[in-house]
Picture: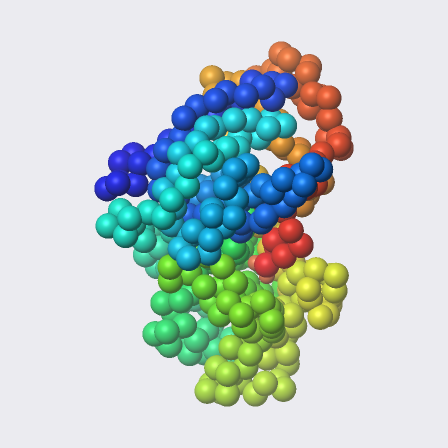
Length: 370
Ligand SMILES: [Fe+2]
Ligand SMILES: [Fe+2]
């Protein structure tokens, strides 16, 4: 993959981690976005920096051991940096050790090189979501959806917003991809359980994360939280957006339909500890919560698989995923295939619940499932 002056893309940096985590020492040179730099101190009192290097094809953790002050100053002024360094493995994870870092020349920076994008077509996904809305019965929930998506600003943002800064659907078009997936699944489930109010379930599915259009900033890299997003969060922001449009359509915000829809938005994280002010208390809200939870986690695993594709049919364990408190077994086995290597299926030394290094688990935090 070539870009004008960009040099390597993250996806070009092939990584064959030898089991046991020995280093592979490949040279890496290119322009990347430096994200989340954190300056830390070794036991000997020397400064070093943890950061992530990213572009539209992915992210890799990185470390700087020398000239940390000057690197921090450069990154603070502009996150686009030209680096050279070596790819190494640390505890079975790839890591770039940077030996030189300088500001990238503005002529070498193309914004589109640094904003990750859904692998699917935004226009196709949008058409499918519109078809689902058009297939709903006319009534208050449908009128609400029509009003919301007739608003140019909301529609444009909804089609392009990511669903998160990290982890699941964390790319342009991610919110639409996640919403469409959740809505498709809810549609199937509503056909399975006869007692479900299909229109309410679909409306809640389509709107449950709409607050993300205000929670995240995504017009230029890096994708990040807005101040409003950090302070208020997408559940409250979503409720606010929906209530604004409820005032424009024949749906009284005190009506049963309105309350059922708002309840789904407010409860979709399932637990108060996960940011929902109320727990799901209707069949539709329970379904949405389970489907939302499943879709975000499956996308997380798919992302791990994309970052570490199975090579020559050899299944492998991911590094410990602190967020989900397990490793994942990445394979492309079809029905009937057998696993030859017991070490692989047992997860090496750590197995499913083995020890791990919290400090170096850079992708993990407590706001990941937003
Ligand atoms: Fe969601
Ligand atoms: Fe959410």
